[in-house]
Length: 131
Image 1 (spheres, one colour):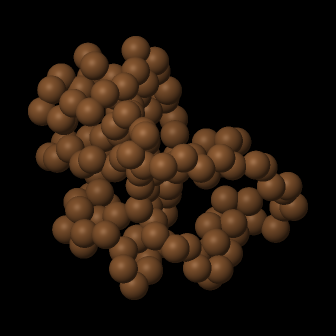
Image 2: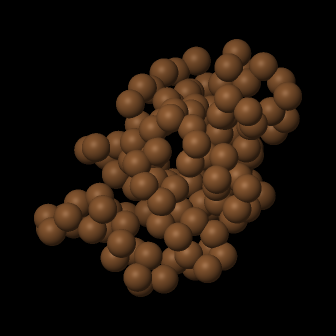
């Protein structure tokens, strides 16, 4: 996904308003070398969001998740809260993800930024636990 400058501007305005913050260095690695899987769990469904989730802010903690499917986006809008599970393996979500997870975040949907080919959902993190 290429993030356009308008999307960047919208995210920046939502997260920090007019405050001036400095950039931090990022490191990229190829997707095929990542073993960790990330699943977003709602009451009705488990989504594989591996490679589609990002930590966008530290204070407050904000996670961004890219969703292309309109049905999935609508389902997430209906949820008051959901959970993000990080697993140190390629296990499918049918396994006991709560037991297998190395970390779990409880999320609350803050806002959505709509784009032509999907939406960036911004979640506030309000609980973090480690397995």
